[in-house]
Image 1 (cartoon, rainbow, N blue to C red):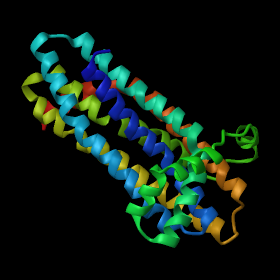
Image 2: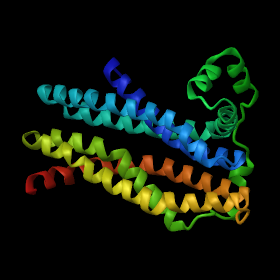
Image 3: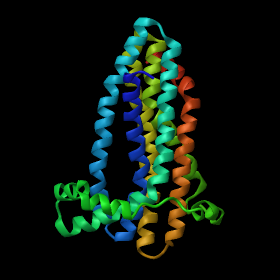
Image 4: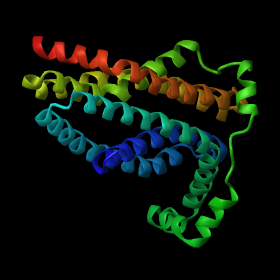
Length: 267
């Protein structure tokens, strides 16, 4: 793995790590009863994700152009496999970090309630006292989170399935369009722009079908209509389906790129 590919690997890793940790924000919001503040603070990490995404695009585009000039089709496909693998690794690490992150985030929400300043919160987090507090709340996922899955999903099975499909499409969208541009160099600009359609479909699945269900369930937990263990099981199912979605993205890469290349010809 050369330096350029490693940078893209890292940026992709950051994007999917933050995406996975987003699930723990709902847990922190329930614990602190400050759901709106929790999502507001999480926007700081979303900025890091979007910044990584902004840098990822130019690096990817340059790599495709270099492979076009050298005719290294096999190398480019291998690169995309590695990048999809980084998404899977990030999801696994994010799942492992959720217990710790939701505890750290809960403390951050309570700290913000007192000082009401994000700069002060960030300064506190990077100071010695903040680091010590993080060390105090380090936790690993418990076996019960897995062994109790048979008690129920907390969400309809179709929501879990839609999450797998949505994550797979969102993960593979940009990579498939770039690879389609390699397969059809004359229309590579058209192919690249078609990624917005793939990502748009993934966004519709997530924001129309999945997020509203999770939001209602979050409110139900706060109101006492749904138990917190049931909510945690739902989070585990969503994280598991997210992991599966990154694996499905590997299977979709070539077929999706071929389809995008075909659509680029007929639009």
